[in-house]
Image 1 (cartoon, rainbow, N blue to C red):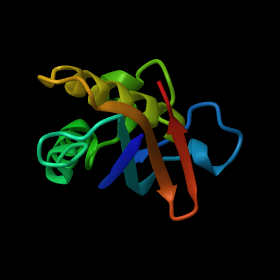
Image 2: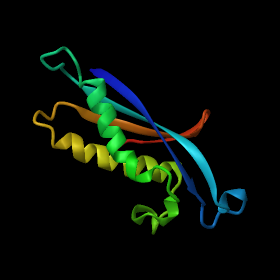
Image 3: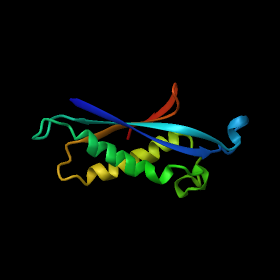
Image 4: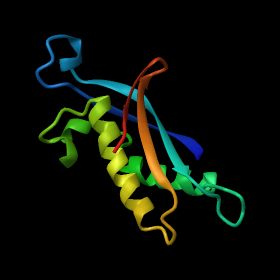
Length: 125
């Protein structure tokens, strides 16, 4: 099994509704998103997927989140925009795009969202 990952970044603000501490106040993060995909075999060029193609897919998923107040976006109207929920949301968008590829040999393994250098949450479908 081959695994490949790329990183993308975006900046956004959020607050955690119902949180008993400071996180209930509006604050921002420079998020780092790591997308990992797997494949059992390589394509004709000897790759799982071109790094540039996967990075572009990641970028399309996070562009609508960049420089926003996450709480104001439709996906987070009913759930808090935590790192966990961001990872799940981004996973769904990327999985949908990968499923439309002509040859569905690339599988999305996980999406990790870093709120800081040492704090992150991952989602696997």
